[in-house]
Length: 268
Figure 1 (cartoon, helix red, strand yellow):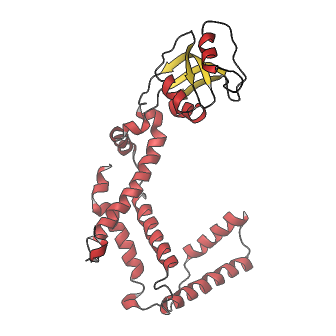
Figure 2: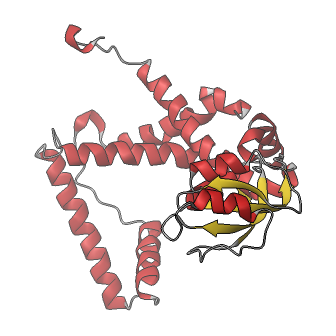
Figure 3: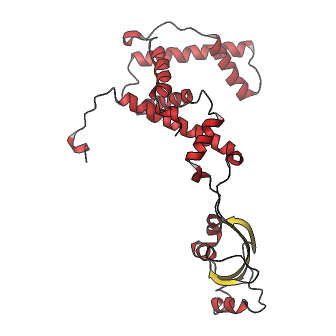
């Protein structure tokens, strides 16, 4: 885990400061009747309009946007005054979601540095392991077309029998066991991983479809790539974990401020 995530000051003090600043506009639980349209509000409206319509709004359209903004704000504040937000599960979920997003956004204002990402990679290197991969061809022997497909497949390893038509591929290159399992089944993948690369047919092994002989041309062992190879993926993963960890740290600090009582029946 990135070191500074463990420090509550970094991940939740900024969030607390912003949330306190916002709440200070409504002192003593009173809802202000003063509405100030800021330049940043207008720019945001224009930006959203441009994104949706692929053009800037006209002066009349902009006035309509601002009027709607004012209407929404008035209705929102009047709803708060009437207590319409109380015990409303939809509003509750939405507010929880917004606070979660706010915490995550604050935590990732400063992008993860390459040094932090490399440290994250070293601590989580197994996540980036490239699995063992196989390249092979096979001949298929159908139980529907043959009386004893397994025996025919066994004899075919020492004689010329092209096998039966197969609905999937006859050759597979550089495939992991997970991929092989997805289209030929667990039994086939388990048997295949016990075989070695060689020029002669091996088997027979059973799949979800029937019996097969296989020629394995190459087996690539599992390995962990170097940091530079997976740098972009590591940066993305580190940022995601950073957002999640920031919420955990922030919640732990908030929870410590509350006295929580549970009914006896709710405690295992």
